[in-house]
Every structure is written in C-alpha cells, then in structure tokens.
Length: 210
Length: 381
Image (cartoon, rainbow over all chains, first blue to last red; front, side, top):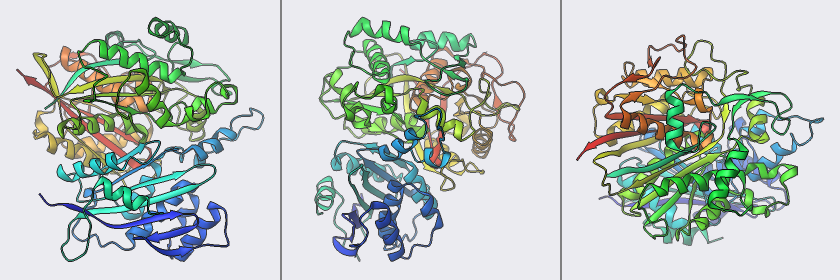
C-alpha cells in the first residue's frame, strides 16, 4: 500500500500567515480580522471577486487553502478524487449571531439570504471546491478541540478505500474574540519531494507550532 | 460487513419507526399550517413535533428539565433504538455520531438566553450532552455538513466499523424548526406556501420539518433477514454554494461511487429514496443525476412531502423508511406527486406497490454543493 504524506501546510493566526512553518506575510497595521484578511488577499494576488461576498470564516478557510494550493501541483489527480475534510469548534456561530440579530425584532426584521447561506460550516468547503474544481469526498466535523487523530485517521481511510488521491485537511475556527486556520495538503508519497508521513501525531505537532 | 441493527424515527408522525411507517403507508402528511410569531411573522406550513407529546414521552425516561427540545428528541430516539438491540452503549467499542445542521440554534433567541450555559448552542457541546447522558466513554463525533449530514454520517459510521475503530456505531441526527431556519429559508424564497410536492409539475418550494432519527450499525447481526450497508460516497458539485449543479454532476459522482464501492450492478437497484426537496432546481437536478446513472426506470420517491425537510435528521429518518420498505417489500407513494414535473422520465411512485426490494439507493444533496449516497442490500443467511 502506498503511504500518504503532508506536502504543504499553512497557519493563519494573529494577523500572520505561515507556509510550511515559515512566516510569509504579516500585517501589523490592520487589527481586525476583516481588514487583515483583505490585506492578505491582496498580498497573495488572489484574483477572485467572490471572496468579498464570503463571511469572515469562509474567507479565512479560503485564504489558508489558497496559500497551500498556490504551492501544490495537482498532476494526474482527477477532480473527483480530491477530498476536503475540515473541522472546527464554533461551527459558524459568529455569522449565526449576525443572522439572529436580523430577526430578533419583528419591527426591524431583515433576514438576508447572503448572510443565512453562510450559517453552515461546510459552505467554506463549497467555496474552496468551486475555486479549485474539487469534486471529491467532503466532511465537516465539530470538536471542542482539534481531534487530529480522528481527522487524520478518517482521511487515511478515504485513501485506503481509494476514494481520494489527495485531500485538503484542516481546522478553521472563529470565535468572537479570535480566529485561527491550519490547513494542510495530503497526498501519496512522491520520492522526489520531501514529504513527512501523514499521522495524527504529525498533524498535531504541525498544528501546535503556532 | 456492516449491518443495520436497529432504528427509530421521531417526527410529527410519531415517536417510533413503526408509528411513522404506518403513517407513511397511510399517506399521512405531517406538514400543517403554523401560525406562531415565535417562528415567523406570517403563517407557514411545516412539520412539527408535538411539544406536549415530546415532554410526556421524555418524562417517562428522564425527569430532569435540563434538556433542550433537540436534546430530548435525540435522547428519546437513541433510547428507543437501543432498547431493540443488545448493543452496549457504555462500551469503548460503541461510538456515537451526531448529524445536525444547526443543533440547539433556538438558544440564540432572546427568550431562551440564560436558560442554559452559553456553550450549549455549540455543536460539540450537544455531542457531549448526548454522550454523557448515555455514559458512552468515547468522544461523540459531530458532523455538520448541511442537508447531506445524515447520509454522510451513516457512510462515515460504516467506514469506522469496517476499519475496526468500533464494533457498533449509533448514528443519530436531528434538527428543530426554529425562527432562525424559517426566516433564513423564507429570505431565500424557497419555502412553498403549501405542503411541498416533490417531483410534481406544480412544486414551488420546500417545507421545513423537525425530528430526530437513529440507526444503529454493527459488524455482527443475528437477524436472519439482515440488511447491510454496501457502500456510499460523497461528492461536491464545485458549482454554486446555494444551488445544485444543472448537470447533477456531484450527485451523479456520489451515486457512481456508492455503486462501485458496493460492487453491485446498477441494474440490480430496486428502489431509490431521493432527496426530493420539491424546490425547482433540486428535483430537476436529481432527475438528471438518476437518468445519467441509467436508473430512470427504477421506482423513486421522496418523503419530504410527508415529513418536510428535516435537515440533519433527513438522511437518517429517510434511510430508516427505506429499510422498512425493504423489510416489508413495499414501495411507498411519493406524497404530493401527481403530475410529472421534471425533465427526465424518472419513475416516481404513484401508489403503494408490493415489490421485491433487495438493493436500494439513498440520495442526498445540500447547500455547499454537497451530495451523498448510500446503498443498502439484503443479505441472505
């Protein structure tokens, strides 16, 4: 059986973006999540106007995925064989509260479909899939803390069952106070490129780096 | 092999699989007009679980008031399914997976605040509450993947058993009708003013529903009439976040994956339980996916006309209904369907019909471009 490894990984937190553990972007001027995401988007020269329609957590997941995927060659992998498995702790609570605010007062009642659609955590999977035409397996899990063992075992099972040839994994969370994204790309070993074996312990070690 | 061991449905049509199935056989529709500003400023049709009955049933097993509406439904559902098996819920080898889109979202409403701790609205906390109630030693897995959550949770649970992570999995799912969800779907203009009519010419949107369902899966079954999960798959349309693909691409891929993992011939499929929300786009998309998979002749129905769209519960309770159809060898009429309203000539079931059901397909699709499917098959002892 071919083994799978982690080819690239990205952290986005504290207004910094790291690729494979190295700081590649920092924004010291913008202190809100929204303005930081916008300046990061510009920095990485992402040309994708739909980005600005997304809620903040989808932008965060999309951006982290973008940084990883700008540095990945997806040779010979069919789009239906690329999976996305993500997890977080708060689901979409911040956006949920925006929607709830809009309906609390019957005299000032303004629910909006463009907010409501983002009250599902897997919408960010949809956004990443649309941008990159990924059509494989999807799952969005909710854990109090990132259960790296479960998520990496699950991704391994998708590989063993032949359901994916590559998979984007990650933890993308937003609370009212803070945010963090950790996204990584899992693929079969390629002997020409250094690629550490995909295990729960490694995912944990990389995740906890920052 | 992974077998279906036991199940339960809690909905507007009853509190057990049997009650619900008898109601489906009789063509009962649980969707009624709701005129309650707690949910929405104007009346709308929805399928709602009777609160008094829920509390009466819940108080038979648990007298504590410290559970939310959804938690009560999930606990009752798991409890009933467990009673029908010898699966030990307190074993390390038994896992629990919960499928839900919005969990205890009603706790965000101003009138519910301060009744529970602030974490109670979080989905992992829901998992913890349910796991603790049953003294299950494992971390409850919570899956929130829009309207495919139920079917996806079943596929994931089956995989976890096949790979040896667990011997048994309790797959439970639920969602409630709340002001949050009603106002959201209303803002999308996707709710029908009447009980929804899947695959019908006059369909004009979905009806919301609430409920819970449980399926217990295991690697051993003593039942002489075993039904097994043969395979499944999920796929993304990569097309639009709130509308399905016009070509049914993701749904078609999900069907193909389920067929290939199940190692069955498409011609052996006897029946399809579709997602069938009764929105214009969903039903049309599904008819295309079914047709592309070469399954136009296969009898198909949707239970959304009976229960409405129960979101995180849908994939589970509709799979339970499919299993019950297999056990009783009967195809149930697709509620709300009279004039064919999709472009492909799929075979929508008009009246209850006896049929030998051995291999059946469950489909689901949802926001985020997500699609999933699952194949169940009778295994002769």
